[in-house]
Length: 495
Image (tube, one colour):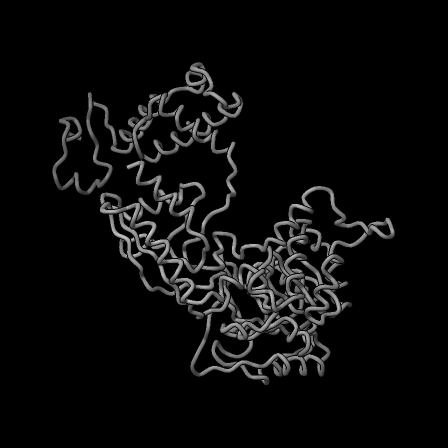
């Protein structure tokens, strides 16, 4: 108490109090946390009010209500930063500038065409498969009123899946089909319909995780089905499935390891063997082939993936796959198989939540029609065209781009050709390497990260990759160099 009255502590006592060492001011004890709070409150009080900013008027071409909303949002963000102890109170003019930038961003389209110079063909962040011209035309055709659920011949209400039913039956041999918004939805709908509160047998080596940390076991659990794991991570035998069948078993599921490979001491059970087991036990077999190949990609020098039609031919009762991967179409989940099972899926109340809309169906139909002329696919399906371009063709394009950039950049930086390996991406063709040639660029006084940012903010945005302090423009995933050349011209002119 004497020490409190005299206004100081011993060094040892101060250390014991840790962060709560008091600061004495006029006989009042203040902790460091109290001082910090007062500092934050002082900074908060320096922020201009919404009314004060709005009294200065609305920037030209901005709706007043939109600008007022942007001011409130900007001030809220600034308050949050100050409360976290970050930054200093900005001026009213700074708030106006940030609010105007936010408001203007809402007046511009956020989803825009970009130039993919990453070398990743099925880049999830960039929308995966680029659509064919036929699919783009179909999107425009269906963007107004269309016969989504209307039979033109009979003049009565129709079924939206009828537009692709015959196409898929011809291309795969399936009795019936259903389209939902992605393959995760296809999996959920299938399990929720056929195996609620019952067991689904699946190999431990096939419990995949897809992009965005979505894991198959969680989807299965959420559907109401109970997962019955068999075998080990690297080896599963037919007897593992046989011994797992019980009265509560609803179906057998096989999942293609589309986004990874296990090599070495491994074994998996063939689909045909699972189908035989399913037939003998009265259980449907579901094959999730993931990436959704409709043709044999080995014909084009790529590794072979499970083909939907082959799975149907092997006797799978249902086949599930994505529409925006190796199929080269829009994001969708396609379910093929026995007509009686497809009917059950269609009557599930969750189907309405997962069903595809008119734009998805129109683009998918146009994409599927391309497969009616397989000899023309490499020229008409952008995905296959990019995958099958020869290394020599890619190198020629890279040399053209490098020559153009050397003329622009001159002595302001460096331009060189770099042999690299591109990727398929999108959880498809795991391990497949695509020989490519990149153009590596550096600019004096401009770090690679800053140059990459300038390219991303150009019109149209150009998405490169950065490696070893160089910006790499990978010619494997793009065609045409004119827009890249113009972007570098603008960057150089801006200094």
